[in-house]
Amino acid sequence: MMRAALIGMVAAGLATPACAAELVQRGAAIAKANCSRCHAIGAHGASPNPKSPPFRSLARKYPLSNLEEALAEGIVVGHQGEEMPAFAFSPSEIRALLAYLNSVQQK
Image (cartoon, rainbow, N blue to C red; front, side):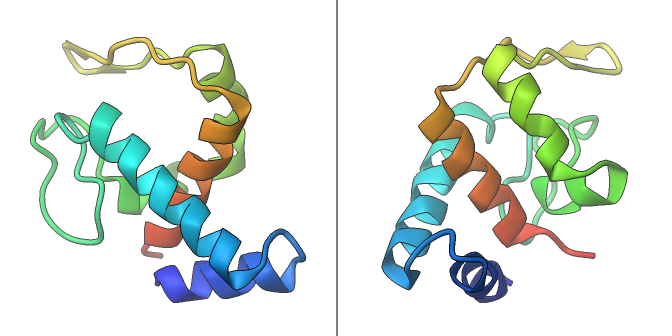
């Protein structure tokens, strides 16, 4: 799955293979540091908070590109009684996080 995302980024001219892999790895670190206490951030496993959707299924609900603005402005979402902390990411962090999110999607 991650390999397909990297190939897509390279084919689109967004990055060299090494840069694309580094971007995805940076996004994984951001997700682990900021999101993993509630969300399953990888390709497998349940979310620690059952009301927080696994990252691998986010694209089924809405286009991931729609998250760019929310991540920049400070995304705030409730998960049926569990409020998500407010996060505001820099443009480079957003690119990395979206690259990672795209790499783990299961359709």
